[in-house]
Length: 274
Image (cartoon, rainbow, N blue to C red; front, side, top):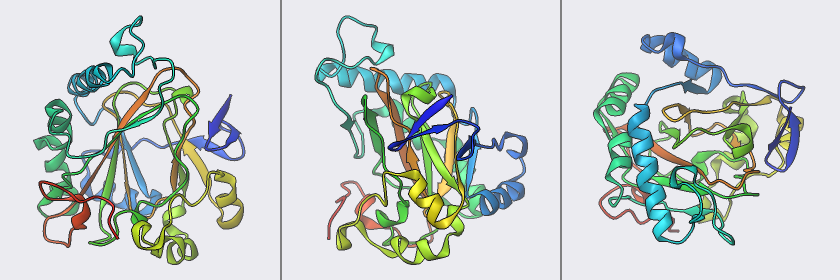
């Protein structure tokens, strides 16, 4: 089947696109998880979050979106169908009005995981990157470091789908091996979005692989799954080709004893500032 990755249509299991590898088989071996992260640059863990808690968070977000007039009133709330004229909604912030979401992202289960994975007491940024991506939209390819590189670079992104996400709804895709693209890391990866005015590297996933190598990988996601990766992994999203919102959230985790990018932490994070 053909999948819309960024601005390209690529064949799933073809020359340019393959399936992400699950790490559930080594989930209880923290040493193996660290090795896998170094090798692959990411961890796909199915069912990491409690599915019911994720769906509870999803419902609270959809209720908020319905109050904003963003959902089709003639459809079921849980389907997240876009109202006429609605577009992608970015709801980044501390999301204190969504306690069910924070329960998933700040709860004991995920914090204990990062305590063990990092071998140190962990923290999560107060700012969460919550998105409802509408039809026709996608996220261009980028390294996260350009947006949050003013503290330690040993920060991990946890991307959580808040609902089941088919290929058509536009889940995440990563460029395999891109955490080892030293020239790209030294050029684009050394930039700061606020200081240098950079954003996504490209909307064309093949521009990267033709220049630096690698191959793209994606999958279909279920509520409860997570994709964990570091600051130097090139990733983008598939285009949402449906009339349903693709709801997902990015959260960040690091050691409590390393420098924090203060734009994204504290009770009132400043966000993007020069």
